[in-house]
Structure formats: C-alpha cells, structure tokens
Image (cartoon, rainbow, N blue to C red; front, side):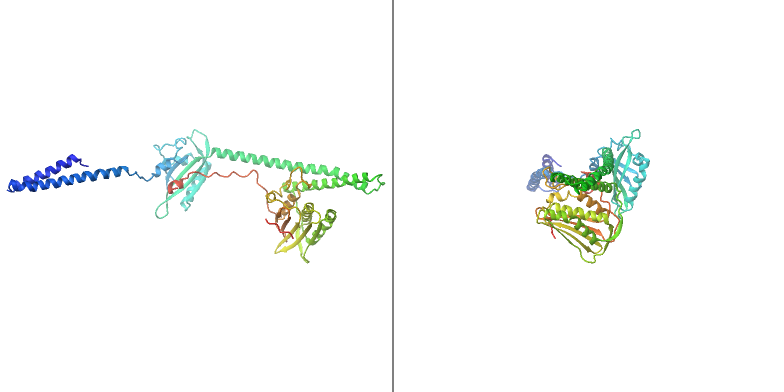
Length: 469
C-alpha cells in the first residue's frame, strides 16, 4: 500500500507533467499555470482523502477477529488413542491422535499395512469384518482385538477399534477413519467382575447345598419331637397331673410344627434356586384346591377372629399344573393374609379364568404394606418389617417360595397394597400349562460401558393404589 509521501510525490509529478505538456503544445506559460495549479490541487485533495480512508479501513481489519474453520486434521490429533485414515481397500493414509507415539506410530513413517499387521492373527477376521460392514452401508463399526501397542517387541494388549466410514457423493465408501483405544484397564475390570460372579455363584451353590443338607438333618429330630408331643398332648399314656404340663407340651408341638414349616420352605427354596424342583403337571379342579386351603386355615382364621371366604365360579374347569405347588401357593398367601389381618377383618380367596389364564387372588383388609417395601418382597428372607420389634413371626420365605413356584409354571406374581387399607396378591398361571421361565437375578450386575466424551463422528460432524375384594 503506497505511503502518504509517495502519494504526495505522485500528485506533484502529475501536475508538472501536465504543465510540461501544455508548454510543448505551444500554450503560453501564463495560460498553462492556472490549469496545472487546479490539477495539482485536485490530486492533493484526492491524496488526503485516501489517507483518511485507508487507515480507518486497516484499523477495522485489525480489530475484526480472525475466523478460521477448524482443520479436521488438528481435531483428529486431539482425540484420545490412535486415529488413522484409510482408503477403501484399508491401506493406511495418515496417522493422528493424542496417543499415536505411545502406540508406536509416527506420522512421518506410514506403511499401508501398518495397522492390520499390528492386529493379532485371531482378531484380523473381526477387523476385516468391520471394514466389510462399512462397505455394505453401515455408518459405524467396532472390533475388540489384541493389538501390538508400542511395537511388535511388546506384548499384545486388548484394544477397541471404532470405524467410521467416509462416503462420496454417490454414497459409496471411499475410505474410513479408525480410533484405537487401549482397553487394558477395562478388560481387567471385566475379568474381576467375571471372577466375582463365579465366586458369588459358587457361594450361592454352597449355600443351597448347605440348606438342603441342614433341612434334611433337621427333619429327623423334628419328626420325633412332633410325634411324641402329639402322643403326650393326646394323653394316650395317662393324663397330665396339671394343666401347665399340657400347656407346655402343646407349646412344644406348636413350635415344632412351625419349625418344620420353615425347614420345608427352606428346602423347597433351595431346590428352586438349584433348578432341582421338578414339577409334576396334571389336570385338577382348582375349586378343590381352594376348598382344601379354606379347610386347612379355617381354624387359624377363626381363632384370630378373621373371616375367611372363597369365591370360585362353577364349572371353572381343570387347570394343568403341579397340584402340590399350586396348593402351597394358596396356603402361603392365605396364611400371610390371615397373619397380617387384625380381628374383625376379612380374607378372600378368588379364582377366575381370563382367556387361557387362571387368575388367583388373595385379598385382605389387614395392615397393608408401605409403598417403599413392596418392591423388596418376594426375595428370600426379606420381610416388610425386619426390625427386632416386629409383631409378626416368620422367616420371610413364604412370598419368595410363591414367586419361585409361579415362575416355574411360567406365570406372573404381583402385589397391590396400601398401608392401613389391606393387600391384594394376584397370581396368573397358564390354564393349559407352559414351560417355566427363567427369572433368576444376575449377580453381580454387568458392567455398564462408560460413554465416551468425544468420538470420531462428533469430531467430523460437529458437536398402587390397593383394590380389596
């Protein structure tokens, strides 16, 4: 850009040239001076105007911030791991990434097969399969392989390779970019989780075997306790000298029966968890099972002042299931309902058919269950009130056993309750019988894959209310 001095000199030169031209043309000096002076004045005015305009424009340009589009290469260089660009055939074109040197790669030394040569032989099929997925139209692909990080002299390490395809205007694959990240720490965590899972499964199996063995060992002395206490209570070999002796003998018998019920529940629960509970499915009248439950628990309900009723439609039909298991489900649910219902309350057992499903409902007007406790019920040894000051006995196996038996039949189990208003338990079973479903809880839970903070694609494209019957 011309300086102000140069512009002034140029204006003076223009005036002198015009004056000389007039003289050569024969114009008199007196006549040519006014014209030359006017031309010189105009040139000076233009020079001064340009002087004022140019600096202001330059200042504005200097003040304006420089806006430059980010370079894809520089963006890829900031990504974690090793970032590589390939053509359609897989040949290496360029190298980037924050950890390129740690992986043993240099942008100055590029060999077409440098990446696949570092992939362990066992993982090359997965690597090539990912490229083939991109050719078939997939936008992204992934391969977990062993990779010679740092060079072939080092041991192979587990890495994850993320593939992102680059397509031309026709949508055909023209190349792809990969991001290779070391997942050695993640693989170690997965190994620890698998080891912990195996240990937990082993401990669970050991617990199941222990419960089964203890249950069998407890049954033998319990049979003797119950048998002899029954004989003594019946006074078959003579009367008691006083009522206290009879009362104590009845207490022994009642406690023995309670302990036997707990042992049986533990044994059944251990069989279910071990997958050794064999269902014997046969057609039977569900009305008979409901009536048998009512007869078995009528005395208990009457002693507590609770009304026990049943409602079964006529000609409901036969259900194909394990009768003993269904009977156990009804007894456990009805017994729980009676236990948690105060004197004057009502417990109802209903059976109905909905399409190809049998619906069993046990409802009560008892104390109910808090909303935050309902989700925990149905797990072994879990009770709604687990404090030492609880008013109701039990080991917390009744609902767990119900849930397991229902699951073996391929049915469903649900609880609706409101604190102080009562509880309704609904069991749905297939009428014709189906294969059981696996409702086992996976322990420990699987590791959740952590989300990446930045990916290749982001770089390239921018940033009960209860119902009581």
